[in-house]
Length: 111
Image (cartoon, helix red, strand yellow):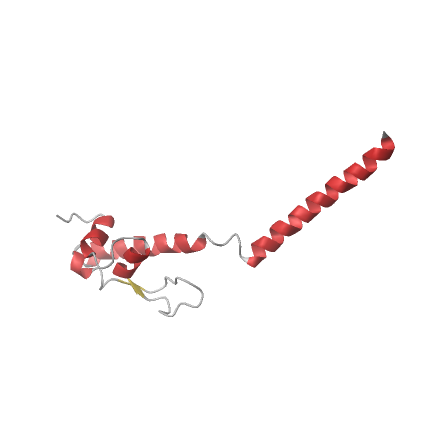
């Protein structure tokens, strides 16, 4: 039994080492970073909503005036990371051009 135990242990060690290498390679290749866009989208939306409530009296027509300067959709974003709250709302899936829905999603009491 001792003769078979050594090769099986070595196969298990090699399998674990290969698995670790695959996970590390996937991490550096960016496969585990796909969720960061959604996090920064939510962060940009939260900051934009706070600005809409604090400085723009929660008026729906002001969603295009609230600017979020550091949100970037991709690494090579053609907008250079400058988006209005209305654009952020559209990125989140709210109706295009519906300023009332955007303001409502920010917690503003819109009738």
